[in-house]
Length: 169
Image (cartoon, rainbow, N blue to C red):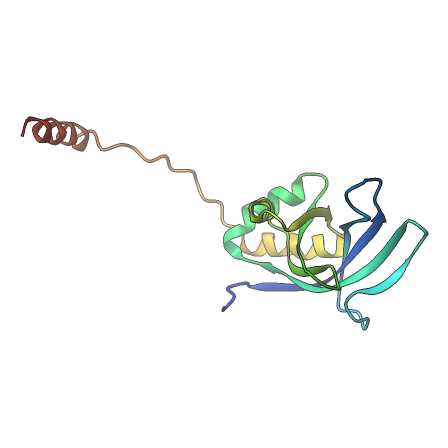
């Protein structure tokens, strides 16, 4: 698939494995952070931890910035706690999750939750990524006025007449 992104930001994703306090699961996984760049480590490299908590480098993803989404990026950055959304799909083997996407668009992040079984988590956006997104918005944002569509009053009665005529037949 060809991307229409004007800017692409390579990021690494860190996930946490935590011992579950549940009778139904042994461990819980969740993304906890992203960082800018591409490390030399292989995906699913352990980064450290304690007895009940361990961190892993899950792999690399790319945040794509599109000029048509600048309003969403701007609103995200202005929220006071800018976030990125991480989408991971469970696998039937090791490693337990496949990294699918990372986005800075809150609307896309919300849409990702419709997938059902995927693990979607919003994490804090690092300041170096936020700076790139701010510059992108400043360069590409075009304010578009909201235009409310008006009904065509002439066509509405015609439709009613056609329905009434169809009922008479």
